[in-house]
Image (cartoon, rainbow, N blue to C red; front, top):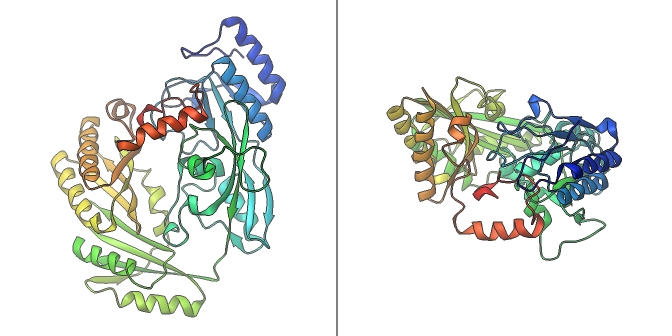
Length: 433
């Protein structure tokens, strides 16, 4: 196995052999391998995959890589490895596969400490043994790891009731490029003064440090779950129902809109609690349902987000944000743009107006034009459009992140504080960070 750095920061050929020996000494020969085709990230091929077995080993690997000028890509279950810009360079993939334990489930305190490489569903199964859960519903829970979910800030319809990841994490451990293990919450090895580590690390795409462990606040598994479905006759009726529920005293744990091309939009509302409580909430929701038709709830309605990754090609999948009041206007824009460019589309929007969109077109040029048009209109009204998956031809013509606004200088300064040599995921985040 030959580690040869592919970036301008590379060490000499003589020192590469020393780095290889050092890395082998940290994790053991059996936990290093030459990268294979499936390890490629947006066409950039790393040299080596390394699997540390502890947070301390992760930190030592990063320190060794940084000193040798190697570029590192952190990886968990690789379910979202395509998200972000193509890396400028890739020498090492540092996998958290072996960091897969639920370290502690303090069920009496309703907290859990878990390593970053633990598959999300395994964590939930462990918590369920004591009637608890992490109130989060990310994509592909069977294979997505806790660290990957944190790094991409992935969440689903449950966030309308329980908040996003930043509301659920109470502590985190980061391995930094200089070999430091930085912690917040619990017993502290070293605090990074002045920074809220969880809020910085969540959604940073592994550009600041490698998440090795997290501590979560938990919630009980609900006794009952009830779903009510509606079909709106038009965008106005959809918006009126959505805003009416959001402005009411109802407490749904899921509120989403499913729409596609010329089909009428459908609204799914989920309630959790006691049977009597759920029935009372459904009855109240029905009183808000003027202009819509109640339909039988679809058992797979909450899988609609994951289904957006399947369909005809070429396509792109994007995340959009906007005010809830603007959802109907956005769907109208989607229809106009699609008709103009001969595209088809499907979208799933959560009640807090964070959604996922799939656009399929005759060619990549049409996809680029659609993304630019939609992004321009969303950004004009304070929203955003982030491309999560698309053909390489599309990614070469358009920045997947869109505008960072006036936040970019601050984000670059934070990156410089945590990773001054550009070791981690170089170029993959917004603004080429």
